[in-house]
Length: 59
Image 1 (cartoon, rainbow, N blue to C red):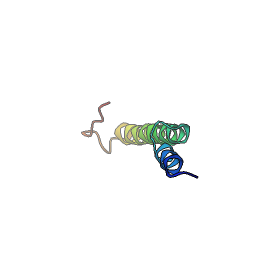
Image 2 (cartoon, rainbow, N blue to C red):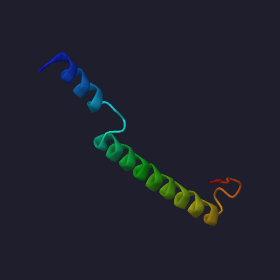
Image 3 (cartoon, rainbow, N blue to C red):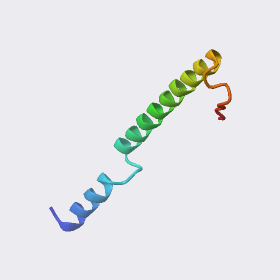
């Protein structure tokens, strides 16, 4: 395999625009969104119970 082809393959493998990277970023964003929703629900629960009535979460 010529050096140019190897170098091109290497760049393509680490290019953030590749499908694999897009899937990884999309899954990470989905996990982050689910975590944010869980934290919001947890703090809302504390707020309803009066434990953290002065704590405010903004979006």
